[in-house]
Length: 360
Ligand SMILES: *Cc1c(COP(=O)(O)O)cnc(C)c1O
Image: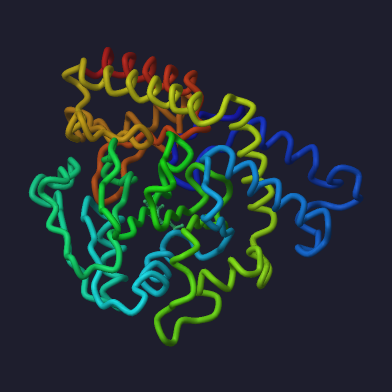
């Protein structure tokens, strides 16, 4: 089988150039006689790979010097606990904004450690929009404000950055990190599982302002303390070395492409074409608010759900896979992260038009 266009929400498609380079370097990385997977994480080869990855990421996102970059494991889901454990810092309350399924999971986990004030929610419109900041009811006692800039399942994205004054802003950027510029200096903590827009599953990226470190909840495990990892360059224990290496190749790929400004332009183009085709037909439908639609995850429905199976089957036969919507939402979802080329979206549009013609 040829390589397909993979619209998976995660683990998601990686740039083909990155996979090809990894293949080339698989058995013998740059003449050292072994695979990156077989290297000591403390040897000079791997520490070089890690340092280069961090420096490329810092350059791409223009991360200020007073922020630590941590390469962790455990997925974004483990950050649902690590964020409160590290950022409550003696306080008992935190603000959370509820925009869908990932927000809800973050809230549920935080409730184990503190009193959660749901400062805003889009539950009333079935999580199809973001609540405007004017409606947020922030708690003056909150240690931090947590939100989910891109809800991977609902396909809702913040196209603006909340203003929380002096209270640290915390963002689960798992599904839109590196897809658009971000002013890191406005955040206390940014975290992301790697498997959507960074690299292979198994790596979790944390970007944290350094003054927030060092005051964890009593009983916090050593490995759940950001300071443990910050003080040890993410090498307190064995980090996910191969995933870090691939992430580093992805960062290089992004830099060669032209950086975040270039990838943002491409992402806007892909999303605009896809939403325009959906809106322009009576056969397909997308119910998220136009101003809050995700550039990364595009959920849509066919006018007759009885056609879903045929759509998915024929799409697959055309080399377009993983278009089935999340089980809680149904319908379709096209995830079009950084690694999805414009040609993949165009191929999907062509298929959708042809399917509509024969079934509409
Ligand atoms: C995928 C995802 C998660 C969960 O990530 P894991 O690495 O599986 O824990 C959390 N938040 C968002 C926004 C996601 O897209």
